[in-house]
Image (tube, helix red, strand yellow):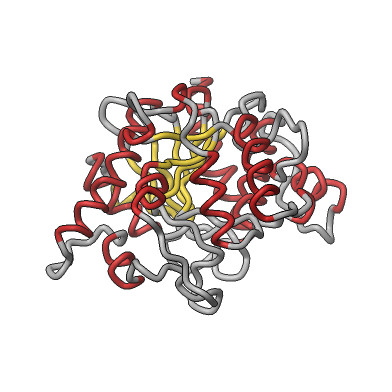
Length: 310
């Protein structure tokens, strides 16, 4: 696979991008590890993002995009597609988008939006009609006004990503490291949020810069609940280091396996956000649909009820 060389402007634009959604109205923010590519090639994905993103002052966390920014789904989808079609020559159909992480987030949101009712945790084989609704909820279909990260959804959701650089797959067996001028080991060490003795000043500076954008977004919009997906130890260190979060030992929860799969924080000082950090959602190396059901019903639902109906 040919490597991609990020220029300085692209790197800064990607580092300042926090995620998707209408942050002011979002009741739940999901925290992923990093952006995927939606089925597109890396070079087109980066070029389209850097041209389309960060042009709306209403989504800046300060006076310019350099202070951090997010993008709203309804606004950005059309712009992104127009740019992608121009630079790539064609678009992939919306219906071809498949993402286990988006699917599992959609399942959580549909359960909440339907008044904590309905079994949204069945397989495609067991309930095809339900699965179709789930897919429609997260696929960015033309003129969709509600759904994942949409302003008009019954319950607003948003996305934050811990790391700033998009790639197709972060698994060891998935895809090769795609950047020619950023060393994979150095990047991963920085965003493990551990204090590595040999970390360069530049790596530490960029890690802290990225963390400052996420911290600013979390504090400014006071999301009632943040649900982290995967890399929970790294995210735990991020919240402890930059937001002084407290994760009590009794707030470790087992869902389906003989290990602690979920950490829950005390409300963050000053904003009251409760942080829930989970293992990956997918069935291959994560909690699976049974675990997702328990996470949603036993952990997320009580927090929402206490915050909005208590």
